[in-house]
Length: 77
Image (cartoon, rainbow, N blue to C red; front, top):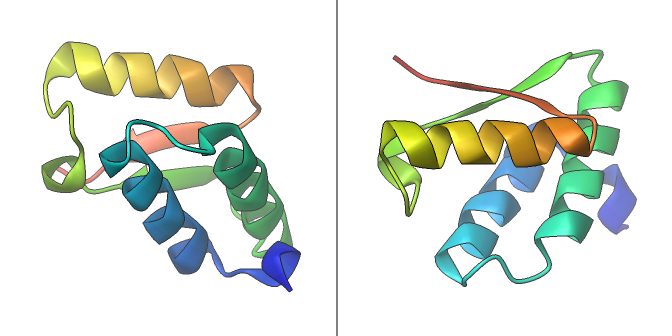
């Protein structure tokens, strides 16, 4: 069942969606949000090297977009 995805699986789907020009990104964010809630986590952590737009403005845009959908995003150092 898609809604029972782990945080890691949901995060991988986000990376795939970003690579595919944000295909189904809102659905993947919703899945990630549900996975975070089940895992009792309050933020998703992404590896900037896996992002399409790995620059400050790209990361800020991603954080803002996800925040509007109720998911706090941080990046590995």
